[in-house]
Length: 77
Image (cartoon, rainbow, N blue to C red):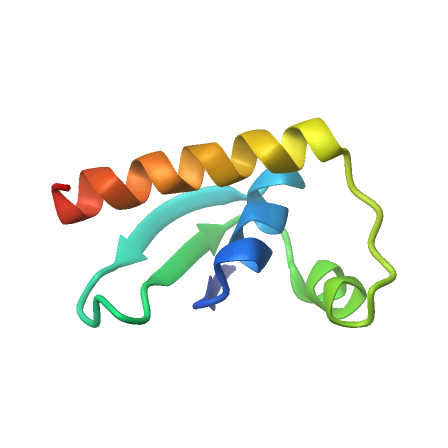
């Protein structure tokens, strides 16, 4: 199942929860679309939206850094 989001921080949550980042759609550079493959992420997104999700801070921080690195690889900056 492929899940897409334009929310950078939600993308970091998905990555920190073990989802695989399979791509970043850069067709609109103002709103990058992050694409994930793997398990159904609907429950994680629901918990995130309702501020119920508890995650490991270190994993989340590392996920943010990883996504930023991948963005710069995609955009060539």
